[in-house]
Amino acid sequence: MAQKVRVRFAPSPTGPLHIGGVRTALFNYLFAKKHDGDFVLRIEDTDQTRYVEGAEDYIKEALNWCNIPYDEGPGKEKDCGPYRQSERKDLYHQYAQQLIDNGHAYYAFDTAEELGAHRKDHEANGKTFIYNWHNRLKLNNSLSLSAEEVQQKIDVGEAYVIRFKSPQDESLHMYDEIRGDIQIDTNVLDDKVLFKSDGMPTYHLANIVDDHLMQISHVIRGEEWLPSMPLHVLLYKAFGWEAPKFAHLPLILKPTGKGKLSKRDGDKLGFPVFPLQWKDPKTGEIASGYREDGYLPETVVNMLAFLGWNEGEGSEKEMYSLAELVDAFSLGHVSKSGAKFDPEKTKWFQHQYLQLENNDALATEYNEILKEKGFAPSQEYVEEVVATIKERATFISDFWDLSSFYFEAPTELDAKGFKKAWKDDTSSIMRQVIGEIQKIEDFSQENTQSQIKSWITSQEIGFGKVMQPLRLSIVGAMKGPDLFHIISSIGKEETIKRIEFAIAQA
Image 1 (tube, rainbow, N blue to C red):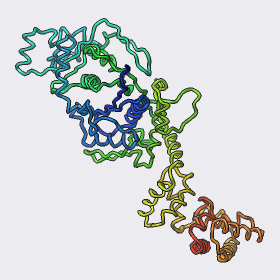
Image 2: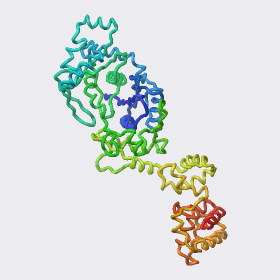
Image 3: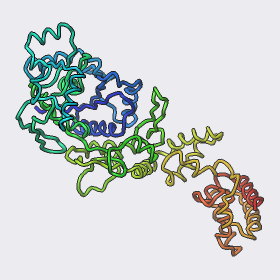
Image 4: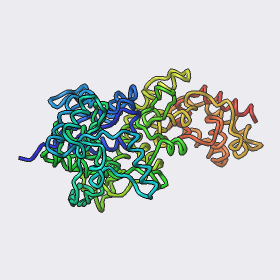
């Protein structure tokens, strides 16, 4: 019977979650759901010196906002908990000891000063110091010392680390679900520290032990962990455990395509690199987030899915719901090469998703903005305005600029528009328009349009001579949706008042 698919997203709570991390979580989620598996969140907080208050809550909130919640993890405890590595630290020493007992690890007593001296000596000779097979028998460790000397050092409390004993003269064959076959000469590997002198495991040991105990079937993580894959595969062998399948996702690159996307790129080019806004608890510095900048979660998910994945050759589909992404996703269609981030494409996705949003929901959100500006229109009125303007909008925050004239009269007229639309006889024509408007009893959009256009035709005046100054009077500029929709919405009295104001400005 095939092993159940279980994947994990294992961030460190050292600050806000970068969108690269969100994409890793998303791909894990999609893979798990595609195969009826479990998506586990594990908080890798073994390095307590880098722990940042609030970062774990931020990670959970970000996943929930993106609608990719974890099935198992902190607050959703199941059989494999606890899910914070700091709460599992008693586990790790026994596994480090197991590796020592079976000859795959050893105690190393070298001080920082001793190692520093070795590095300097190597550099002076144009070499790089690597702690591994070629020099470990000459260094201060349990491989070069007698059992009695080692025990004596431990008994007197001398600081030590536990290092992995990398094999010598072996060719390690590995397989990555995205990159295919990988082969490594073990002679180039260093003897990594697995257990630190402060009694905490390093990432490598904790990661392997936790993945094994949590029955993780697939490790889907960022490309930056690819150099760690040989050590992790060797650790599984050393423990006698079956290794999970590995898949290393491509980097998300700067919009220029050169180098990894960073917060600095977002600051410079004016787009967020975090899902939610983040306030640094130490400096108070605020970093922008997609949610607070007005993006919809569907936008962010769809955009991230295309950073390194597509459904396959011949597919031109770009808009995917989360359910469609689950159905279409496969590791076989994840790219090996880096994915260039495109802020303009992200805005394109946002525009598309805004059009799909329910007008009632959009009107409710827009009403909050209107209340802040001192307006209290009915929900029905705002909903009708939203339906008229949303195709021109990318964000709800765009609505005010696109529709302010539905709620307040212009206080000034656009100079360029005035010069173009207002001629010597325009004020006289606009007074006649007021007279015609006063006669209209049914002030619906269709009837008002019909009456005014019939009058223009009967007077044999060019439509532009009336419609352009009329729009300028009502809107304050040469912009906006159907003019008669605006006129019927604001009503007869307000329409006349605005035309009179424009005449007074002439």
